[in-house]
Length: 59
Image (cartoon, rainbow, N blue to C red):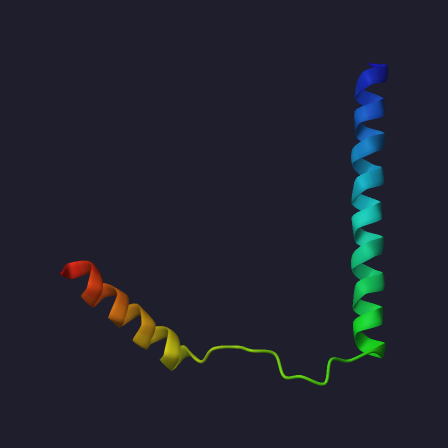
């Protein structure tokens, strides 16, 4: 019984710690914005890469 309470307390502690880290990380991200644009490939590029990989796979 007491071992399960320790396990529940440890999991709750880890969950709260990770939640706190995520909140702080988002707040810092709002204050200090990265001036560089995030590198997000377009769907067209992904489709072309997928088609090329299928051609290579068929050979």
